Figure (cartoon, one colour):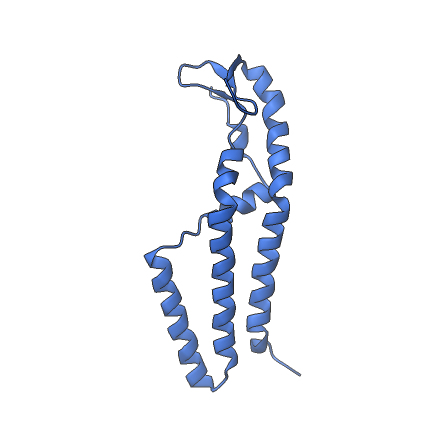
Length: 151
C-alpha cells in the first residue's frame, strides 16, 4: 500500500493558485482573445450598445491579471510546494530543509514536518490568491452589470 503524497490534498490558497496557473498564454490565448474581440464587436453592432466594448476591455484586464500571476508568483509557488522531507527514488527519505545539503530522514518525520510546511505555504500565498480572485470577479461584474435587467 502506497502512502498518499501530503501535498496532493490542498485546499485554500494553494488550490486556487494551482487553478489560476493552469491558464497558459500562448498562440491559443491570442486566438481566443481575437474571437472574444470579434464577439464583442458583433454584439456592439447588433445591440448598438457600447458597453460591449467596455466588457471586452474588462476581459483583457482579467487576462492580464492571470498573466501577471502566472509569470510572477507561480514559479516560486511550485518551488515552495515541494515537501521538505521527501523520498528519493531509492526509497530513502531526505530532509531538504531550507537549503544546503539534504539530511537522511524518515517517513515519520515527513508526517510531522510536511503538513506544517504546507500550512505556511498556504498562508504565504493566500493574499495573492484572494486578491487575484477578487480582481477577476469584480472586473467581470463591473463589465457585464449592464446585462442585468433594470426596473
